[in-house]
Image (cartoon, rainbow, N blue to C red):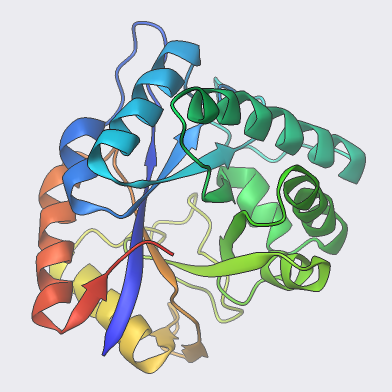
Amino acid sequence: MYSVDINCDMGESFGTYKIGNDEKIMEFISSANIACGFHAGDPTIMNKTVKLCLEKSVSIGAHVGFQDLIGFGRRNMNITPKEAYEITMYQIGALNGFVKSYGGKMNHVKPHGALYNMAAQDEELSRAISEAVYKIDPEIILFGLSRSRLIKAAENIGLRVANEVFADRTYTDRGTLTPRKEENALIKNEEESVRQVVKMIKTGKVNSTTGKEINIKADTVCIHGDGEKALEFAKKIRSELMINNITIKSI
């Protein structure tokens, strides 16, 4: 029997700007990564999203990113490991205040966007993020790109980890995500997306953009909640995983 977590980035609206369809997508996922006000989100949205997760029994995670609202946290920033430690701790602390106010417990932390991709390849950055999570609560699970340096750094420090794979992204020969600036970075065909996810879960392999088969571990699958057909895809992938005898549950 196979099992996997389905996670989705949530709470990305802010002020008068509405992004995604959190309430409806929440029905089809098991974990939510909630923006903490740096790359997206604001205190009102954070509070609302935490409450919604607790009502829907969806595991809560802090989605920590660069302080880059205009660039949605997807632009690389030249920060020191010390700064990475501090912005990670700050954002976790902000979200955790809302979680604790409802008597809930934070389950995981996942870096966002450029911070996520940089940490996947940078040992010092990975260690700084892992240390911040560990200092706040060593029981928190750190989500990171499957078999990346972030996963290794977290394991070395004693954190539990979740190797993450992506439903709608392609992979390079090195096992990293194809940069978004490249035309083939996103998988737009739903059937192809589902096939990739099922293969990753059942075989521990994924085909790169050149056709090379890469070893991968799929503890949690990320689906994006801000796409035009995000809700329909969330429904479809949950249904297809169940058809393939894959149980969906949070880590």
